[in-house]
Amino acid sequence: MIEKERQVLIMEKIRRSGFVSVRELMKELNASRSSIMRDLARLEESGLLKREHGGASLPELNALLSKKTEPAVFEKESLHAEEKRRIAMAASSLVRDGSLVFADTGTTAACLAEALKDRDVSIVTPSVYFIRRLERDAKCTVYLLGGQYDCKYDMNAGEYAMEMLDCYRFDTAFLSASAIDLSGGDVMAADFSLAAMKQAVMKRSRKNILLADASKFGCLAACTFAKVSDFEKIYTSETKRSDLSGNMIIVKEK
Image (cartoon, rainbow, N blue to C red; front, side):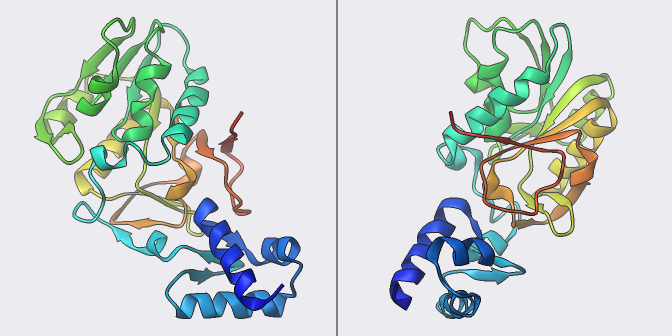
């Protein structure tokens, strides 16, 4: 296989999974380590990828996400939509009838509106977007936190929302994240007020579950609100990464 062919295949693989390891490329492309390293170096020089320890990722995954740079919730609803739905469906199996659940902001947590709609559970959420996803004949009970409306995230936030959280003790909290840095174990949010709310919820929940599709790995965001080890389970989509922690559950396509 010539150099250009290898590089095309490398970019196809990295666009599908977000990260590729050198070992994986050596095996699948039947190439030496020196050839793969040379290909990665040239692709990085062209700005097509970013080399990391043991492999490479897409360069945009390394950009720092802030409230200004993170896409609005309505812009993300079609991204990895089926993966997010599978993650929410799998995670919903943890919920027992009669329990009180927190559903976070974001498009993955909003998929719980479908997963829990016919369950005998009570759901607390700051997300107006979650309410929009809920069917009219849903049997679950939903409490919407009040506060200042944030149109970008389609949610209520601020001091009043934080005060309302003091009323609740959750059996299970389903949290979302803007970015996950597995090398340092940081779970991050792009907005400081969102990060503060997530931290408050985690202190008031018996079980904290993170819902994050594989595109969140390798990203960086403005504020760390938890560590990977703080979650009982982390539900994510299929990924070729080899540095996943023991509490991660890969939800595979059926």
